[in-house]
Amino acid sequence: QVQLVQSGAEVKKPGASVKVSCKASGYTFTSYGISWVRQAPGQGLEWMGWISAYNGNTNYAQKLQGRVTMTTDTSTSTAYMELRSLRSDDTAVYYCARDGQLAVAGNFDYWGQGTLVTVSS
Amino acid sequence: DIQMTQSPSTLSASVGDRVTITCRASQSISSWLAWYQQKPGKAPKLLIYKASSLESGVPSRFSGSGSGTEFTLTISSLQPDDFATYYCQQYNSYPITFGQGTRLEIK
Image 1 (tube, rainbow over the protein chains, first blue to last red):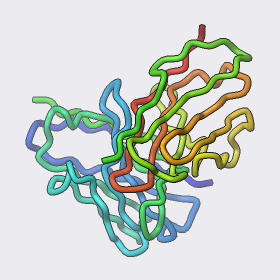
Image 2 (tube, rainbow over the protein chains, first blue to last red):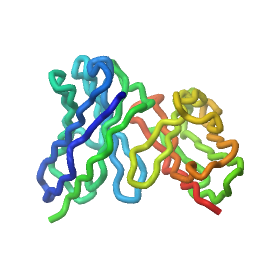
Image 3 (cartoon, rainbow over the protein chains, first blue to last red):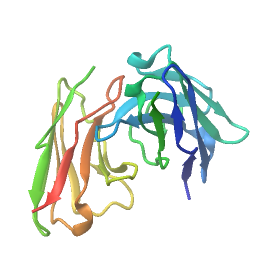
Image 4 (spheres, rainbow over the protein chains, first blue to last red):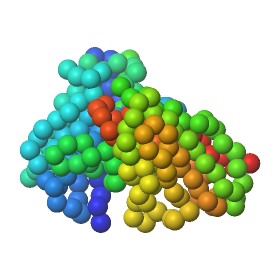
């Protein structure tokens, strides 16, 4: 069965960086991409960007350009999302979701369990 | 960016009721719309994609319709498991955007 298992909760200080992992199993990793979506406490869903596990191409939300980097390790079927220069409003649950191989397909059929990132001094 | 607006924000209903949630896009998105269900502390679950296609394993009481800028999610007969928050999402163009959510609560 398809599973996306994310790394554990993180607490970071403002200005620091965080790197969240998402390990995929149950499907051919390079046949899909991964999108990252975050949800601030009590708020809605915000798409952060996408990476192709096939060729490493990325597409980032403009508001995060320059602060976010998405990568994959095909040898371990793991996707990573690094967010730098953290601010308090980056406090959120971060989700990975299976997406299209060569472009954002948009209908996210499998999701990770979420990783809470808390930014606090 | 394409803005997605859901109505109502909160909906109170009873088991067995038929309910409809509306999602409007700020510009045409053709049929590139998905609906998700989210329960507290859980990841969203895909219900409908391409406006009206039912995701595998999703009960047939869920249905979606619409195209262009106006879309609806209908639950034909509410079950206890359906009380949750529902989000629409457009994937016609970058950035992908979501509606603000509709909380479906027990009357």
